[in-house]
Image (cartoon, rainbow, N blue to C red; front, top):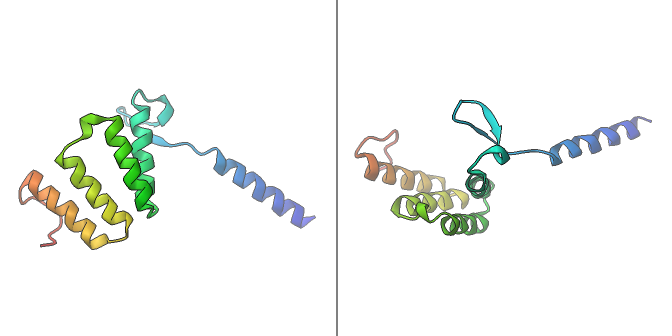
Length: 119
């Protein structure tokens, strides 16, 4: 009887996980599901790319960022390319190289103002 209860709870737990949504902080500082946003296509694509980076799936992340750039050409430019380069280093678990790339771009954009100094 206990085994059936444990199995039932496990199945119900997995069912809840299957209905997870992506949320973002709205302009009024309240959490809103991505599908309620006017820019949901961008948010969804950017979130997917970031998830690939976070989970170390560099090849999928590179394709997701490429698709994001094609779908939203206004992102194209040196800033986006530098960000993607750093993100891909992070996805490949080259954390110190990623930190250096983030810091280099921050220094180029904001001068010597930076929270970290990896030079």
